[in-house]
Length: 353
Image (cartoon, rainbow, N blue to C red):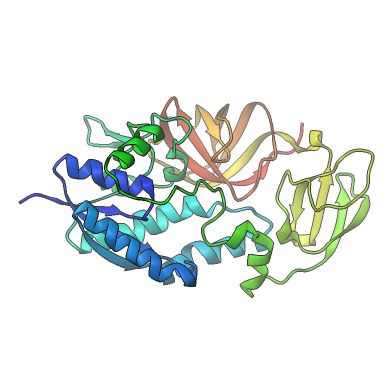
C-alpha cells in the first residue's frame, strides 16, 4: 500500500505547488487546512470555497483542522504575555513548532498519514546514523529555515519540504503552467492574527494587557518624557518616542519591572552579545563552546559568533563584532554553513564593555 502524505494547504501559491510536485512524484496526498480563529469573518466562506476548488483541481481530498484553542493558547496568549514582560516575541517560530508540526502533524498522523509536507523553502537530510538535519533552502531570498529551527528530531523525521531545492521563480512558473488560478501571493511581514499590523491596538483589544503610562529616560537615567504603554515599543524603534533632543532617540531597553522606557543614541543600541535560554539543538554541540553563524531575526544577516554553554538550556553568545538592537523575545538561530544547528530565545543583551 502506498504511504499517505498530508500536505498543509493554505490556499496560497507555495503550498499548492508543493502539492503539485508531490503528486508528480507519485505521492498519495491528503490536503489539510487548519483554522486559527483569526481568519477575517467576511472571508471565511470564500476561503473555504477556494480551498475546495483548489483541492479538486489538485485531485486530493481536503480536511479542515480546527486549531483555534491550541493557537490561542500556544501562540496568541504567549504573544500578549511576552509584550507584557517587555519582550518582542516571534509567534511564527512558535507556531511552526507548536501548531503546524505539533497539532497539525498529530492530526495528520491520526488521519493515517505518515508525514506532513509544507510549502517552506528549506531542506532536510539524513545521516548514516539515522539522525535528521535541517538546511537552508537554495533560494537565499526565500529561505525559511529560521522559522523551523525549533523543530526536534521526531518532528523533522516526519516533515517533507518539496520546495527546498527550487526557487520562488520556478514555483511561480510551475503554478502558471498548471493554471491553478491562484490569487497573487501576499508577501507581507505582518503577523497573520494582527489586523493591519497594528500590534499595539491588537494587544489592548485582547483585554489581557492594559496600557500603563510611565517615564521615558535616557541611558543615564535622566527623565525625558512619558510613554503611553510599553507594549507600543520594541528595541531599536525610533518612531513614537516623541522626545526632542539634539539627535534622534532609539529604544534601547524596555524595563517592564519599572514600567520605564530607556532610550538613547544609535550607538547605545550596539552590544557584543546576548544571553539565550530554552536551547534546542538539532545537532548537539560536542563541547561547551562552539563557533557558529547566528541570525537574530528572520531578515537579519548572519553574524559569526561564539556560543558558550551555561548548563543544558542556556548559553552566552558573543559576536565577533558588535550588533545593534538585540531584542529579548526574538529567536537566535545557530548555523554552520547551510545547516541549522539549534536555537534559543534571546533573554537579554550583554552589558556593554
